[in-house]
Length: 277
Image 1 (tube, rainbow, N blue to C red):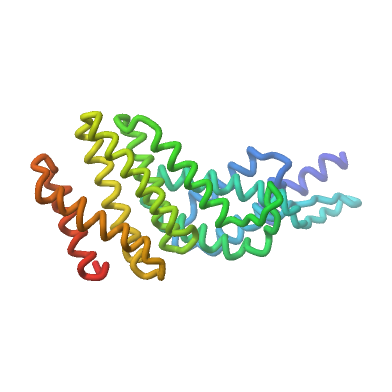
Image 2 (image 1 turned 120 degrees about the horizontal axis):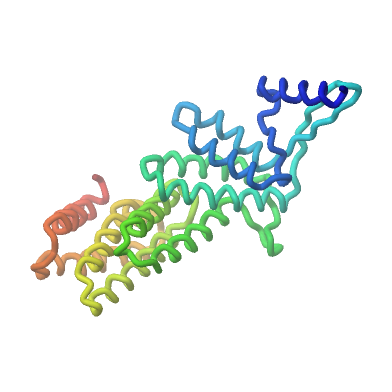
């Protein structure tokens, strides 16, 4: 009888949202995953900070339910460093996949990562391998791995094409929010160039122009950042590619699709205008 009464009280409390984090962290990883996905599904500009608070709670705390003489006492205790780090890896995996599949919300997802990295900064001190590790580091490494994983797939499959564009644009948004380093963008550039040149020798005409389109999209997104930082290496790489490679294509590649020709011409104009669109 007492057990039934306790269960009724717990259910009542949950229905009244007393326990926002009702799936205690690390007790059921599937429930935690479902909660994170749900929060990312409902997040919009107008509820950003509210949902952010709930996500922070999900990653850093767990709920303890104490039944003492039929009185329910709910309390939240802080997770250990390693538990927060493990939850952060799970969060990053989920938000990367969401960004790839829901490109209309890329900027919101990047903003979430920015806000959460600021707020989680003091929550994480030691990583899995004993090195300093925070949400920004986890995001940067995970994005690199995901990009290379998708890049290795057959882009003649439409889903793979969309996924490659999605992860690339998410990386660009994270760079613009200064969550991950600009060199991640240039790592993507180099790998896309390799794919582009490989496709030349495979007579993969459509693939060649697809990779070229991605490079132009990348430069449009991160060009201004590359020109604003003190490291001239990035600026020189972009100048060399745009002034030589892309300019040459516009003037000499008779098979270049018109939409790409227009994009390259606009990119050159934007660069000439100090990246003011």
